[in-house]
Amino acid sequence: MATLRFHIVPNAKIDKVVGEHGGAIKIKLRALAVEEQANTALRVFLEEELKIPERSIVLEHGHKSRDKLIRIDGLSEEDVRARLFRTGQR
Image (cartoon, rainbow, N blue to C red):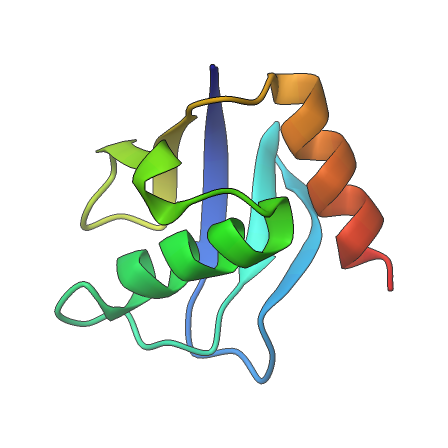
């Protein structure tokens, strides 16, 4: 199990991992930051990039913030970072 910080930039042109922001993984998402759209898009993005079921991704803190704390069951922090930064560098 890994618990990581993410910094989300909504309303982007493409869904993409763009690096780090103050120790958090920075992700740009096409979704708007209204009515849980960005949170849902983030879970779907992580599910696809990490190749894990969506139920393994739990938003612990930051439901209405760009800064989020997410628990990912079944992977270590090193695994998550390796998969995201490898796939984000396509």
